[in-house]
Length: 265
Image (cartoon, rainbow, N blue to C red; front, side):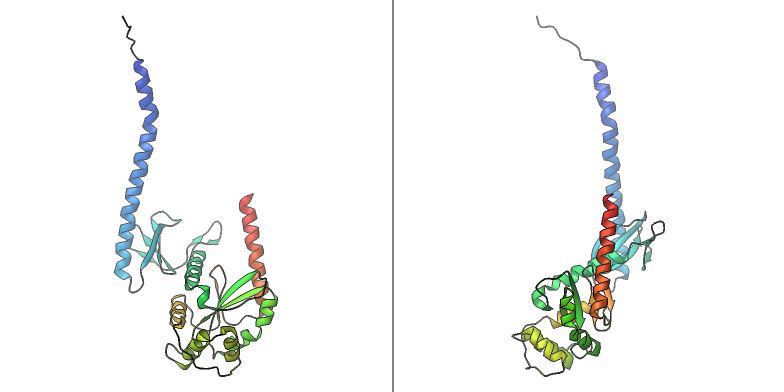
């Protein structure tokens, strides 16, 4: 006859005690996710009441409890969890004295610039380069021409220059047509250089990105030319001499290396 043995009645209790914290943790996490989903819907509803143009591209919790980051294209807003209050400005970490807003806006701008694609730009590049800048330019802009006169200096300093068109007179203007002719030329670089020198180039039309360049420039806050964007999305308005630009870029490299070194320690 097989002997039956009774299990330890405490074993079941112990398992329950051990599992209880895990179950409570899962329950808490689920509650937090559910609350966050509700908050984000409140934020979306509230934002849509005041949004006149553009679309919400992301909603994420900010560094402040109860405050959410709302990206609308390359613009960043802060909205309370109940969707009733909106802040339009910069958020700072006081202890670290750190701007929490600008880097995120710049990053979004860099993504928008890259979405155009280099095939739709006019690029002046040395064989080897350390940095890339993107310049919104107007063929008829005096300081844009001054910048272009230093193209060899830029390239010699290891800076690759990508041009996008921003005819300040607007779509359909004479400057707009000049930009189209450059983008439609067999040799875009030569056409750009000739145009910047004030020479006439053959009038050409083709499927081109000039309108997209101009509209993107408006979205990114360009209101004058040249407007120079660095690889991290930061904008430098106006003409910057090649040597000064090189110093700015090298300084940024050193600061980035210093921050990365501090994080790894």
